[in-house]
Length: 356
Image 1 (cartoon, helix red, strand yellow):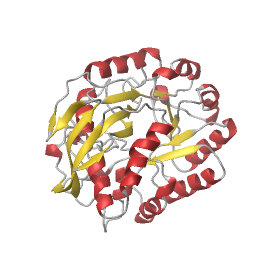
Image 2 (cartoon, helix red, strand yellow):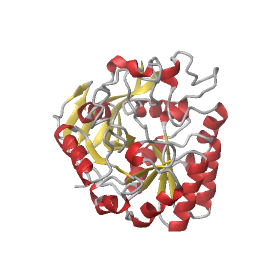
Image 3 (spheres, one colour):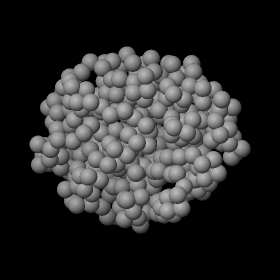
C-alpha cells in the first residue's frame, strides 16, 4: 500500500445552488473522497452566482449541511462588486475573475472593470483568472502593474505555458494549474488521447482540447506548472448529447488514478504529484494543513475507469474505459475513516469550511 497526503483540488464546480440535477455538495464531496481528494475549492459561477454576502451565505449554508470533505468557496468578480467582495474576502477561498466570455453578474466586458478588483482584493488571498492566450497575457500584466499574485486556471496551450515561464523568470507573481484532460486528451483524430469514441457534445470543454504539440509542451514544462486541478464541471449525458451541449468534464474522482498512472509510466514522480496536488495548492491558496489526514492506495491495482463506479451525479466520464494503475482503498480525514473499499463512511456535514 502507498500512503499519500490528502489531495487538494482547487478548481471544482459543485453546481449548487441552481443546477443540483448535475451535482451538489453531497455528491461532489463523495466523489472527491473516493478519489483521494480531502479538500476542494468551489467555483462561483452557479445559478445564481456567488458574488455578494447573500449568495456566499447561501452556498456556505448548503456546504455546511452536505459536504463530506473539507472545502472553501470562491466568490466571483462582477462589473460593480469590487468593494462588496473585498469586504467578505476572508470568508472565501479567493476571487475568481472570468476574463473571457461569461454571462450575467460575472461578466467583465473590458479591462477597466478589472482594475478595482486588483486594487481592492486583499493580497493574502488569491485572484484566480479564467483567461486564455491574450487575456491571460493581459492578466499577467495586471499582476505586474498591481504587484500582486495571480493564479491562472486550466492552462492548455504551448504559448500559455511559455509565457508563464517567461513571466516567472522576470519575477512576476504568477502561478498556474493544468487539468488532467489537457494533459491526457487531445483534439487530434489519431494517437494517444484522442476522443474518437465520444459524441461531439461529450468532447466540449473550455478551454478546448488542444493539439498534441500543446500537450507535449505542457509535459515538457511541468516544472512551470504549480498545481494539478480538475475543473470538475459535471453535466448530464442528456445535456451533453443535446443540440447545444454545455462545455465541461467531470474529473475529481479520476484525478489521482490518472496521475498515478503517469507516475507508473515515468512521466511524473510521486514528489511531483504531492508538490502539485498538496503542497503548492496549500501555499498558493493560503490553506491550512489537515491533521491526521491521508490516503491509502493499492499502487499495483490495474483496472478500467467506469462511470458506473463513480460517485458523481452526472453519470459519465471522458475517460470511460481507460486503463489506469492505482486504486484508492482508504481515506482518513482529520483522524476519522472517511472512505474504505468503495464505501463513503462519513455523514453529510462532516466536511469543514477551512475559512471559518
